[in-house]
Length: 378
Picture 1 (cartoon, rainbow, N blue to C red):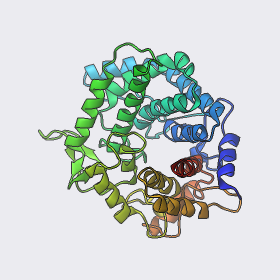
Picture 2 (picture 1 turned 90 degrees about the vertical axis):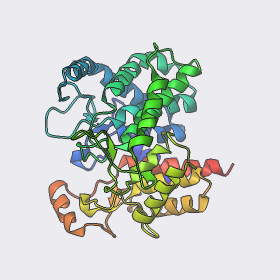
Picture 3 (picture 1 turned 120 degrees about the vertical axis):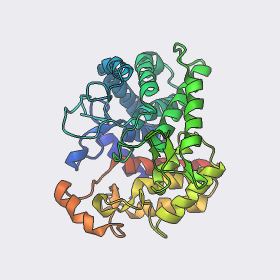
Picture 4 (picture 1 turned 90 degrees about the horizontal axis):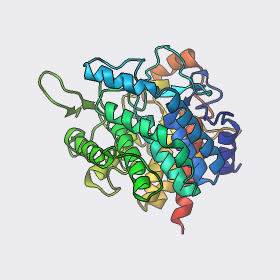
């Protein structure tokens, strides 16, 4: 089977008429659209030339942001009054496919990374498709998103794995930086006209914040501890490395691929999280579905290798991903042959059923890696 063609087909098949990308059609808990997943999926569609698909997604995001834009003023008022943000003020991380909040069901919706991600992805869409006219239609939700990020970027919130709301997370901060950088680039090139919002200064602040508070033992940490007992923000040196830290270099470009801190972080990911001959774990203490190897993370590491000129390692990641496809060619979220916490696998199967398959984000990362490897040949 041509996995590249099948991956495109899976994504197009399960894109909702609204433009939203369902996370997984066969896994009820994932019958929503996450801005995080969707931004990578849309980028994969742009890399494969399916510009109409990604255009529909970004217009869906814009519609959602405009629908709930009133929350930003509520949030600003809460923060002025030293109140904790709540459901009346935070912009959710996932939405129904029609673009509505799902109500208060206990899901950890305060996750900021999707909002920087969609700005980054939109800018990539404009570059790859050449369609700058979309920016005229989306200027207002872009501005709303930036206003929101200015308010929330230093607040503790859930990480990209929807865990640990008590911390700040370098990956989430990287998405803020990457989204702002993407918008600034569009402004500088004259493609987007927004009022002065202090984007460049905020980018510098986010980057310095990471350097000051997210580094321990000469590499980036998984978490940042918020101020407590008279102490300011501090890196959590005990939490270990997390594969999402790849995002600080790719795609959000807070730091270059050859940055010394990034190299040390990548080395830790290789040592602690990349199974020899296998895939990439999220982090060592992972218990979700027993803590398996994640297909999309293996593609992400391969993406890094492809850009860093390490094509053999990138091909190794791509081949492992291909080997995980089922008889229909569908890629799962994770695989279970080498679990970190096997005693926890049954709990999740009983709770939510078999591992999510096909996961559209997994297929997207395969497309991105395959595209990057093809590009590196020329």
